[in-house]
Length: 172
Length: 307
Image (tube, rainbow over the protein chains, first blue to last red):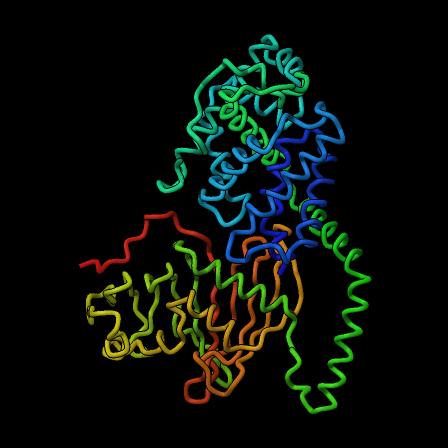
């Protein structure tokens, strides 16, 4: 049964970790540690409640530990309250249409079409090709600050778009 | 998702851009903005690094990690289990030992849970009768179904077991209706009188097999059948599928199905295919094949009587 739960929640926990940890290798380590910890303390899990928030709670604690050990340059700012806000949004993301996390990401794929050209290009070059703002600026012929704004405003626009795709009850 | 504000006031707090160094303090009023940015940052990173093979490797790593931790405990556990089994066998209670792998029960329990969600799903259903030399198609149709006996059937239907015509059968949870395309034999009535209604249209076979209520059918397989995982395979996209055999526990059960083989998608937990041996007609074997065709957009199906 645990294998089934792990398969079902692996991608959403990974996305949760990707929102806080810079280093992809650290994401993989903490992801594995999260599920191993969940397995060890599975008897504490209340089966009447959804598994996703419980396992993300474990992931959040491990992120805080990791930040304490590694220093703040390797882990984005986080505390209990901020992690709680991020966790709430992942809960709402689960309400999007789709049986799997990847199917839910289809909503995000659709929303990318709503961005302006420079926003979409900046996001694609940053997330798909791993370029930094300076490199993106050189490619697109704009300054560092302009790229940064395109990324931030693009993400805000994507977030509004996803929000509009939630079923009525899920909008908070 | 919270309702975000296009706010540039806090842009200097955004650490997700690798060129910006780590933060010290985050003011309270910036927390909502920061959480929104971080969630989208995580989702975009996940979107652009999705990889089925890497995903499978992650699962294997987790299971390997569990296996290493479990090994010592398992040795002690199995010693105890072996001792209990020996005692039970000695006492003649060998039959009470479980004969099926627990993962089959777990996978079917999850499938039943998933199927019970209020979602419209499309299936292709085919019922054939196997004679001594020839296989004859009796029913072939697409079914859209939602839990709560809301369904719509459209395709070639064998009215009276012989007259293959295009038609539709539907139910909105309360009213059941049958509408052959040629207009002959159009009927409707309360769902609770379905047996009489189907008998009138000589469509008893639908109820007999139980395939119109797919959700209940999967749940009944869990209760009344012995389940066993045959193997784990990969579909065309590399997603793991469990092949599960179900065999009716007694001679009589809640369904006419005697045995079935199912494919369960481990990612979604859903049954993607089922081939079932259904009780025969005139000693001929009937075979039901059900294939999942995926979800239907919410709100796009009207199950109510069309006239």
